[in-house]
Structure formats: structure tokens, C-alpha cells
Length: 399
Image (tube, rainbow, N blue to C red):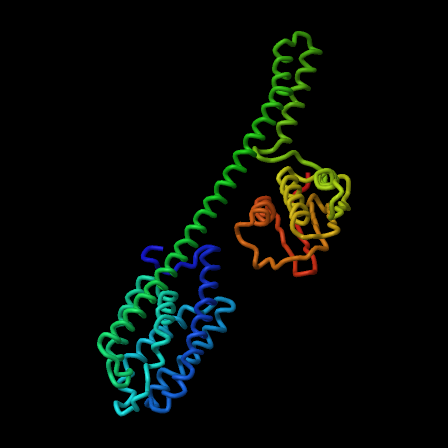
């Protein structure tokens, strides 16, 4: 954001860019409407080449900018071009308009567009260039205003008009720069918050894992070591060896730090049911599972599926206004490979996934991120008034 330059990095910056485009479009249409009378009366007396070079392209680009502001795309080059047309039109005004115009010809209609020209320049090229543009176009207008084609104003009146336009234009440019800086700071703060959240989640998971491993070491490994140290007879040594083998097996099943224990898909469904089903408030949550009993998933898949599914149900409960939420888990085992599909579907109001902010950690981190970290995938299908379905997919080696 150095020098109030335009920046489109981040959610807030993009939203601010779109909203400013719509605001400038509305501002331009209002000023153009006010200048319609002058345009109609002055155009017949202006040289045809000026109308072709300035007037018609200007009106066409204003229409294009207004249409583009709806989606906020392709506006920068249009804004820059419109700002240049305002400046060029004023600079060429005395050349295009004959000095023999009638006394009541009035102020050039482009006078009404000076401030929106400053807004276009700041929007497209940045606040610093917009401020320079505002001073230059104000000086050009001052020179035109004192001529017969510009209304034959006195030097004092021309200076007042030019100063008013310049000061107002500078205020508009600085305001655009302040909004952009505020949006950039909001994006930076959001990214730091997300990073902090991830770090805290990782630290919590590591702490929990250490506690679990500490308990395992105390209950199994230390017991095996103490038993072996005090074994005297052959029977005691055999029992100690079996205990040590059992302890090593349990350690191996724990996987790497940060993972849960392996479990069947039926067990995962039971955990989800225990976690999310309950209470008297809607929606009614139903959990079903279709899977062979011998389908055991590795720890990383267990944790990802459980946490992503429960987060999807929580989102439905909190935000959808649904009366029912169905969770269905389907697992297939084939030649040592496990394929798992989980559907979380509600009958709520739905939403447009494209409009969801990247800062919504419940979707970005807790659902999409967790499944991707486990080499799985997640997809969200939703629409207004048609409900929402979250689909989780995982495929890998079964245990």
C-alpha cells in the first residue's frame, strides 16, 4: 500500500474495490444527469471532431464502467481512460468551441465531471497520481473558465471554482486511499489471526498427543520394563516378553504424533452420532453408516473424517435454519484399499459458496483443510433455498 497505490490482495481489498467501483459509478451517473441540459445545449456548437474524440467515447465508457461495477471487474483501465478524457476534453475545449459562442453559452459541461474524474484516476492509478491529476485538471479548468467559451468568468470567480473543484477532488482521492489502506490492514490482521489459530490448534493437538503418549508410556512401557527387571523365573521372563510385545504393538498403533488411533468406519459413525445428536432444538440430526465391519481406517483418516463431518453438522445447526440434517457414511474395501464417502446434507436455506469469505475458518480450515491434509477431499454444494450438502471423500490403504 505504499503511496496509496491500488492493491487487490485480500478479501477486504477486493470487497472495497468492488464497492468503490459501484459508488463511483453512481456518482458519475448523478453528475452526468445534472449536466444533461448543458450537454444538449452545448453539443451543437462544439466541433464534430471533439464530440467523436471525447463526448461519444466518454458516454460509452461511463455506460461500460457502470455495467462492469456490478461484478467489479475490468474497471481499472476504463477508469483511467475516463479520467484522461475529462482532462483532454477540458484542455481542448477552447480549440473545439468557437469564440463566437452566444453570451449565455455557460460553463463547459465537463466542469461537472472534474471530481468524478479525480475519483476515476485515484481508483485506477492510485491516490498519489489521483492527487496530481486533480491539481492539473483544476489548473486547466481555471484557464478555460476565464475564456468566452468557458463562461467569461472573472479571474476571482474562476479561481474560486477551480479551487473548489481541486479541494473536493483531493478529499475524494485521499478518502479512496484511506479506504484501501484500511482494507489492507484488515486483510493483514485476518491473515495473522488465521496463522495464530493454526499455530494454537497445532500446539493444542501436540499437547494432547504428549499427554496421551505419556499415559501410554506409564501404563504399558514402564510396566513392561519394571516387570522385566524383576523377572527371575522362566515363566516371569516369558510373561515380561509378552507384556513388552503388547506395549510395542500399542505404541505402533498410535501412529505418528498428532494422529488418533485407527478405527472402523462404524466406530467413526458412532463417535459422530454421540457428538452431534442430542438436544431438543432443530435440526434433527440422523447418522447412518453402510460399511463392512472389517474396514479399519488409519488414524489420520479417522481424525480428518470425524472432525470435518462434525464441523459440517455444527455449521448446519448454527447457520442453515434447517429442520433436518442427514449424515451418511459409506465405506468399501477392495484389495486392501478403503474408499470412504461421507455426505452431510441439510434442508436449510443454503448459501452461495463463492461468496463465503476465506476467513470463515469453519469451512476453509476445519473442513477443506483437514481433508486435504489427510490426502482426502471435500466439496460443498449449496444454493439459496435448496439446502447444503458437504461431501467428504477419502481413499487409501485399509488396515
